[in-house]
Length: 456
Image (cartoon, helix red, strand yellow):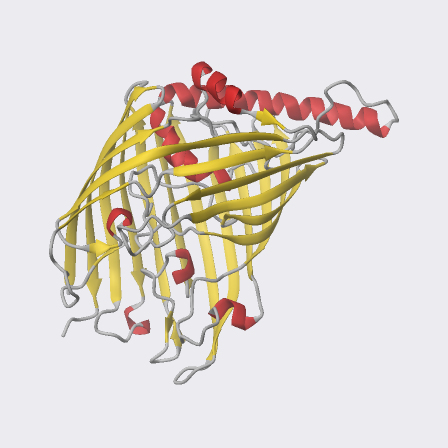
């Protein structure tokens, strides 16, 4: 059976106290800790894209200077003035900084007597959402609710400010060989299923140490290492359950960035992560923790410039882990597996084509398999495949638009319940308008279609 919901959304985003995504000195060419911010702030249009390209040029120049400094230091030359080591991987640009907003953010920066620099950032976001049929989870829609559940098939209207965000970027005192930074960030989606709840949720909490020629180590909660970028859309779910895999979880990640030329670099990531979010056998222990094995993630990415001054990104990622259930009828270990291809292609200065393709099993912790990972009744992991594609067009310095499609297709044979979700897809169109440097409004229309094994 197929259920469908038409989702209309209006959003106002006020970047009131800091319209600046602060560079935290990460070593990653495709910054996982900023990409979620990027998905919101990139709505400011082509002017910011040009500024990002300029900042990327400065980063590359900085890497060249750092390489020369390393050579001098290796020869015993005394430390030069301002010899702060910049992570050779730091293509993490300080995003969205117009001269006015940069100056405003600079006023908010404060430095402790011990030399630590702290920069607050964030925004206030208001969403008005109308669903023609009830969805899970309302203002962060993932799939259409089956008609057999209370409210299934009925329209739903919600107002929300839960995606308002507050964060702090911290930089440790300068050291000639090591750059240490950190980030703390949260929003109010702690109780996702309850649209009227504003429980605080920790999004990011990590420290990053960068050294040498492109090495860095990140410890703490961050975006999954395989996540390179996100769709440009207003829905806070960002295609969860409809083709886009993502999550934020505690991890230890090692990154190496190797320049291959003036505009090309190779980025390698390896991480061990906490799988969590699942207790399908309800024994009080997360199934990934019960396995005693962390989730292992690896990614290889190539960043280069092809048709425009903006970076083209091509990446291949893989993930492996285990989950264990202890209760009947299916006490067993279940593998968690993923392989993913991702590409972001700026085809012209105002137009970018981006998306991912993936396949794997037991991916509900990453919003895959339409949030279905283990079939306890039959004792098997749920296999799934999917992906998404999106075109983003910057119409002017103030107007931008996006059109996209996402699909998550679990294997029907791995599902047993009548209400099991066998297919979930969404097509959407978004429009963004930058009213001022500190206020953006947008609208989004989406068609979300969910198929079920059968309804009794």
